[in-house]
Amino acid sequence: MNDPHTPRTWPSRLSLAATLLLGVVACTLGSRRDVGVHEWWSGDGPVVPHDNFPADCGICHAGGDWTSLREDFEFDHEAETGVALEGAHASASCLRCHNDRGPVQTFAARGCAGCHENVHRGQLGANCEDCHSQVDWRPNGEIARHARTGFPLIGSHAATACWRCHPGAEAGDFARTDTECVTCHADDLARTTDPDHIANGWVDSCDRCHVPTTWNGAGFKHTTFPLTGRHCQANCSECHSAGFSGTPNQCVDCHLAEYQSTTNPDHTQSNFPMSCETCHGTSGWLGASFPHLTWPLTGAHKRADCLDCHTSGVFAGLPNQCEDCHLAEYQTTTNPNHTTAGFPTSCDLCHTTRKWQGASFAHNSWPLTGRHAQAGCQECHASGVYAGLPNQCEDCHLAEYQSTTNPNHISAGFPTTCDVCHDTSSWLGANFNHSFPINSGKHKRLDCSDCHMNPNNYMQFSCIDCHEHRKSKMDSEHKGVGGYSWSSPACLSCHPDGKE
Image (cartoon, rainbow, N blue to C red):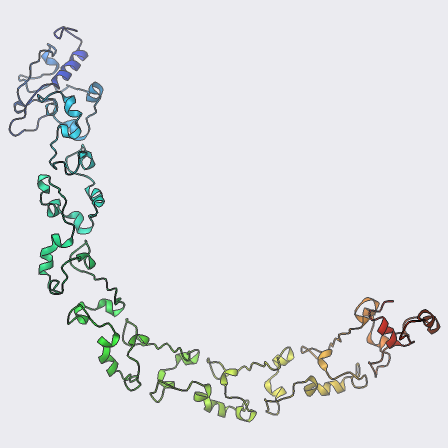
């Protein structure tokens, strides 16, 4: 080994001196005063012999005393020892760790407990870093950690001093404590008189009404009778004047006086049920709205006042047919005259609830299409008769049938079933649905008169006058064909498609 008194270069001598200085043993006696990182205080104990220190005292010491070190004295703790000093450890006096209790490595191996007393008596575990950091001794993150205990610190609890719930906290005693509200709030419970909690038997489960934010402004969860509208604004004593248990919860239990004093309409005389919620809401007693389910109110009925129909003040068993209210309108209507025409009194066949005018009859028995849909009722019902009117085309259009000359319907023997050729859009432009071969091939381009040569009789037609057949030749070709004759009806009978 090298002789400790052998002169060395300044860096190596300084490193050795710093290392040996950090190994000085000292005992803490009395109250310790704060000293610099590299300063020495007699209260830390006697200075240990410097036998293995460099001979040049000026490497470390400065001034005329042995308590002050050179201002330019530096020691890289991490580089020299492999341990970085962080937070408050970086500014701590060397002798706080390097003293006469023994080798610092022995105590460092014990972690925080090597230097710091466990004031919690092991109740919070051995891992001091769970709550403390190297910056200062004050705990960090205790609110988040407290949530893992089953009693999260929220609201006012988060700002409450630990000792308020853990009486021994100031001495480091954090023994488990009772988490029932009344354990801490017994005094609050005893002095509460509005309402008197003890008299009502409310001596536990404070969290049913109170929240951790504040003791005042409790809000009871009114689940058996939900509070809505004006009920939310009412004071508890307005309903619970005689106590809180067994309070009746029907509307009439609190609102019988309003029921009996209401005159528009008179609830008692009208024998209205006492289930007020049928018409009233909790927002206000006025502005009731009855669900008119047995006879839905629509259109103008919806805007009517109750007394418009219930003029006698009777609300139950009122007739609900149209004529019960609108018979006068039915009898006085002249365009058309409902009574003379024999219209039924089921007004809703033509009228809606929006208004009495502008009725629209559903002409289901004889649908109105084309020009018929545009016609006024009087064009067909000129006699004022609406029931039992004939509904065949010729009943209205016989004059048109008789006066038509192109072709002449009468002489041609056309049937009076006008809809065979005509539609309801217009009388002109008739289109006969010809089921004969005129619908296809060369026949499709022919005019009616090409086959119906007698304009006075369209029931007659000719095949043999158009086709260049000789009777003798056709007779020869049809030998043995049953029913053959040299006539147009016979031709069509065997050749309905116009082909051979």
